[in-house]
Image 1 (cartoon, rainbow, N blue to C red):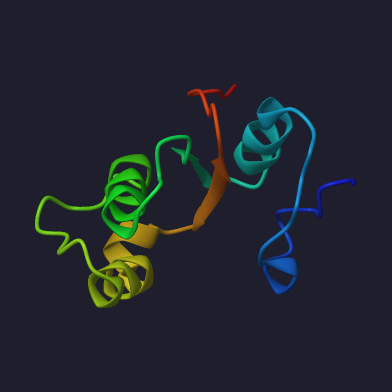
Image 2 (image 1 turned 180 degrees about the vertical axis):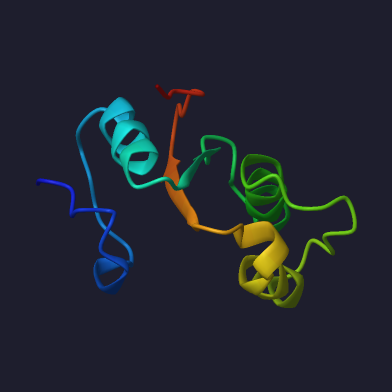
Length: 98
């Protein structure tokens, strides 16, 4: 599946991609988005999933490790930044990028 143009905010959402993570990283860079890979290989529980998200998404130290805190963090304009974020969720995610 071809990635959508990440410049188009109306196409934002969850997209299944089986290609190289480098493709996503390069598309994010072209759209001036931060690219954050999240490794879910060891996310076998709620606590492990929230820990993986906190680490991969570089959430603040005060992140509360619960669903409400995750939602609050993802909606925080300071965390989102000026242009937004492209997130890659997967197993064996390595820090790729241009």
